[in-house]
Image (cartoon, rainbow, N blue to C red):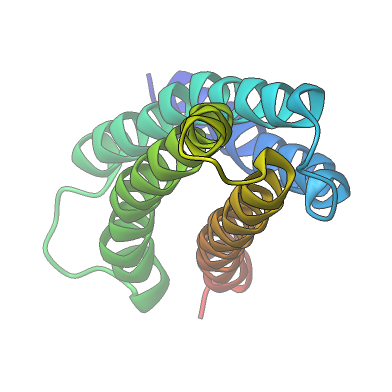
Length: 168
């Protein structure tokens, strides 16, 4: 039982951190050019793909870690690395799911609102190109916030991996 949970735990961790790194690097390429509708659609698809990959895999990490803790380490005297993995690792999983979901929704909402904002400006007599540039700038700010949130989550994952790997 323990070996199976460890396999699920490590596989979920690899998918979670690997997709965070891969999607993060791809989103960096789109950070400067969010004026075109194709780029906005592509960023929206990447955020949805990221959510489909990371949320289930991070949840598997959380559940399999909890099951391993109950199965193997039921006593109350834990070494520091195990307590750190249990408490900080669980917090990193939960906070990253919540923070990335909120940041992703704000980003996709901002990306989807760019076209309607240009249409409203045209009906109000404003130049749509100027509003489109402003919407692209705001979407770029949201993308930077999303990437920052993803970076903080990645640092949290790496911190837990570091402490657990060296068994401090």
